[in-house]
Amino acid sequence: MLKLAVLVSGGGTNLQAIIDSIEKGTITNARIAVVISNNKNAYALERARKHQIEGLCISPKDHEDREAFHQALLKALEERDIDLIVLAGYLVVIPEQMIRKYRNRIINIHPSLIPSFCGTGYYGLKVHEAALARGVKVTGATVHFVDEGTDTGPIILQKPVLVEQGDTPEVLQRRVMEQAEWKLLPKAIDLIANGKVTVENGRVHIAE
Ligand code: GRF
Image (cartoon, rainbow, N blue to C red):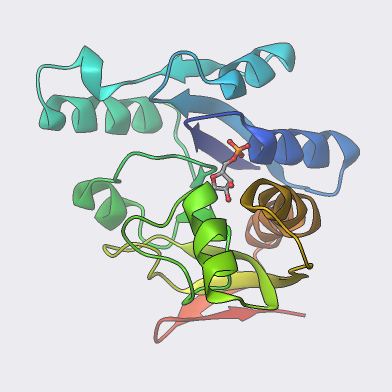
């Protein structure tokens, strides 16, 4: 049974998709051991509470310095013997020490087809604003392993989403969430939980 820690900062719709998938049985061999947010007001924590999942707020603001915050985050993960860390709209930079300790055991959902519209400064609505400004006809979402870069780790799954005439960033964000993010993240977790995902030379292989 894969023990998940889901790290969140906001509304938690991707967390909800994971919760629902586990409850429906479309994710097997995994359970959410803890939801951790840097934002005590994140609705994602309320979603966890409603499903009797432990929710923690571990915020840089509550620690004397960044290193103390990092240690608190790592301690919370170690105490729960976490196997896979899922970044679901988590807006805090992951410390290198954590990336090394959890090599290819941290995944992130990004709301574009990496390598487009990603990297520093591309998060949330900004990603969709950039896609609309560039005039792309197809965008989508990507689930990838987290490495020392920003949105640069090995790509696990991607799903295209059509951009429609007259789309606003908000309308496009919602379509990408509904059609791609909320499907890809649970799918990636289920594949990993069932031993179907390997990484070789920085590229992901998924067993049939
Ligand atoms: C989503 O747009 C996701 O692509 C990005 O952050 C947002 C999180 O939304 N990583 P939610 O908190 O899961 O609703």
